[in-house]
Length: 278
Image (cartoon, rainbow, N blue to C red; front, side, top):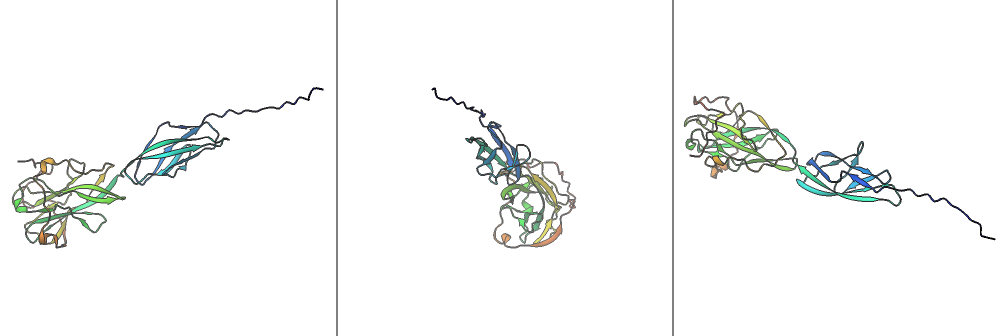
């Protein structure tokens, strides 16, 4: 007798190859803040598992994933891995290029001025709510030697926000004439026009020695750029100097606010930038 025949049904399920969109993974985020990225797996068999080296991805609605932007500035590379539920399991990797930018920072500040025992004038910048005044390296002027209507600038003032050292700008000062009060302003980094506090005039002739006098509060916002220098090449001849000897020793004391107007009677055009090189 011929052998008995037996038939069986073979089931074959075709599985599409695992894929991830977008094909090129790039993103920009703000350092140290919560950010999101959209990663869309397809093919294979759901559910999908998504992870990345150096980042903790948390699934949100749809195909959105949240993560914390790295604190290091610049571009970092992260390997994104996707796996599915098929058997055998499929897995693919892509490289994510992540650009971390600085946070926008809004700060409030006032310029402080005092007369020293030798007749020179010293400047510093106080941020709210900090109690200490930031002292630029170059912050001393001799009023009797100041050229009329020329802006004199301190060295750059910097401060740390959210773990990053940021360049804020320079303290500026000028006199309209030989006997005029000293007018102060702030040359913010990356900004052409100076910031003029309402109270900004210092009577250097009658000021009490070692009394710190304060301008009105003003505010400014730093964007995501990391400014290092301000383009003020025409003002190189009008620079403040670093303190020397006893000038650097006295802490001084609080002594009131600057005037809203130049009471010396010398007019000053707030919008003029008359500090061109001779």
